[in-house]
Image (cartoon, rainbow, N blue to C red):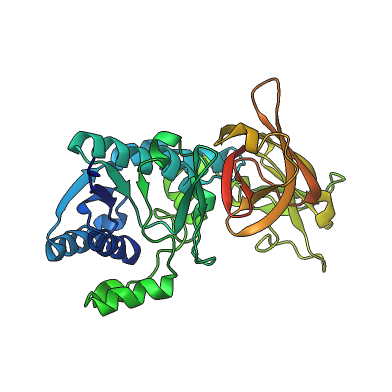
Length: 349
C-alpha cells in the first residue's frame, strides 16, 4: 500500500520551519504550510509575509489560521494568572502540548492530510510499542523539554525534520539553497508574546491596584525592606531584589494574600527532596513509575536529577528526588527522561 506522503507544516516565518519545508519537499512530501496567528506585537505581520513568500517560492499551498483570541484566553491569561498567584508559569509547554500540536492535528484532519510537522529540534522513537519524543541532535537547541504532554494520537503522526541537525547546519542549508533572508534571521528569544521583562508585560495587563509595593521578610519574620509587588519575584531569585545586606539573598517563599516575599541567605533552605505534580502525562507507565533510573528536569536545559516517581491516591504524581534540589517553584514544569527519551511530565504544585 502506497504511503500517503502529505504533510501539514507549521510555519512561523522563521529559519527553522522554513528549512523544514525544504527538507520535507526533498523527502518527497506534498507540503502544505500553515501559519498560526497567535500574537502580533504592535500589529506586526511580517512573519506572515515571510511564510507566504517562502511557500510561493517552493510552490506549496499556504494556509493562515487566526487563533489570537484563543491564544489570549488560554495562554496569555494563564501566564498573567499564574504570576498573580505567586507561581512561575510555563507558557511554551502549555502552548505546545495543548494548543499548537492539537491544532495541527485538527487542521490536518480537516484538510485530509496524513502527517503534520514543525521546525522543533527534537526526534521521536518507537519503544515497546509507544512513540516517545527524544532529544534533538543539537544540545543547544533541543526542545524536548516542552513536549512531554503530547498523546500517542499526535506522536504517531509527527514528522520532525530538524531533529538530526544543528542550528549552524540549518543556516548553511538555507544559504546553499539561495534563501539568504531565511539563513540570516535572528532566533526568537524567550516567550513569544513577552520576550523581554515579564514585569512590564504584567503592568500593562493588570490593574495598578493589584500590583502594589509590599514587604520583604527573612525566615524569622524580620522586616528587611520594601518590594515592588509580589508578582515581580520568583522562587530562587537572587538578583534585582533591592536589598543590600553584604550577603546573597534568595527568594524562598511568595505569599500573595499578604503581599509578602520571604528571603533567605541560605540556598540550602530552598532545597526540597520531593515534589508533587498535577496535569501530568506519562507515555508508558511501566517505563516510569517506580523505576530508579529516571531523570527529572524542572528547567529547560538545566538541573537534571535522579528521582523515583509514584502515583498518589488523589491522582497526583509524587517525585522523590535522590538528591536535594533548590529553587523549585509552583507552576513550573517537570519533565522525565531516561537518557535522551522523554517519559512524561507534569506541572509542579
